[in-house]
Image (cartoon, rainbow, N blue to C red; front, side):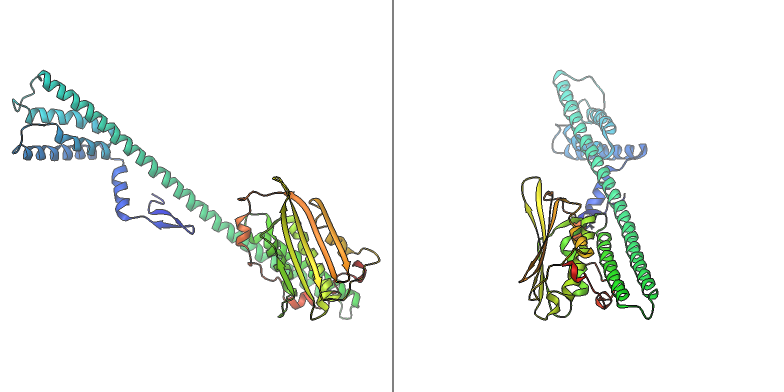
Length: 396
């Protein structure tokens, strides 16, 4: 039986069950042939008869009592039909061999008749109790077998799906590499600085989008992105040897659409900070915080705050550029989404906020948690940074 050699699971791996227990279950629940049933019947009644004969050296009473265990054994190991046969056969054998006058099937007296009736009632009840236990054990073993079979099938499906996801992630990285190679090879050797700037921005956004897509694939079946994992994956090309970024926030899962757009926005903010903001100075730092505040039983407010420290005073733009529009689009798909951008002299800051249904305590996807830190850089960090002009000065 599939799964009959396991007892529970430990980290998803079935544990071996005791061999003795397996053998007992196999013997008790086995479906037996007619000849096997007759063999059990003859063996049990024969053993009970021998024991009663041996006891006859001490006492001549209680001729039926020695057959109760035999009836129970036959009913448990062969079923209720053979159990009832054992009841009648036991009564006949005991009456013929041990009730005076011996070796005759004479009519019982009143008291003997009452004894026989009591024997039949108790022995029959014993048969049906034993048969019920046997049936319950068979159902339990069938359910266990079915469960183990489904578990093995699910593991096979899961393994196949993981192989497919791995193949998809591999093809995604290959596709991004091909696009990057085509973009670079299409560039003229004497390209203008504007073309170089466009190519750098294009490749940076391509890798940010690829990192977000890879994060979704790494999460398996769950179509959500964990915020902390997304932030680290997107900003990993900007992290040098010295710590320049501070991350703070709880485990927070975002929809695939919001997470993908947030990855692009974070890339824009980081590129801008590297060219015009806090990361232009050695003392500059960037902190990214995310929170989820429960408003009531149904809704919560999510806030993602980007704050720069130690950089030059930011200058407000004369007009809104594409980078700013991209950042504002993060919350566009969410309820009451808003983006607040501040050009405080102490440092640039950007707050993305929106409302969403409050998840239950058990609704956070486990697969997204398992995907943490599984994201590798889709391209070397220097290729994301070199020549990247980021957001135009007019966009801040």
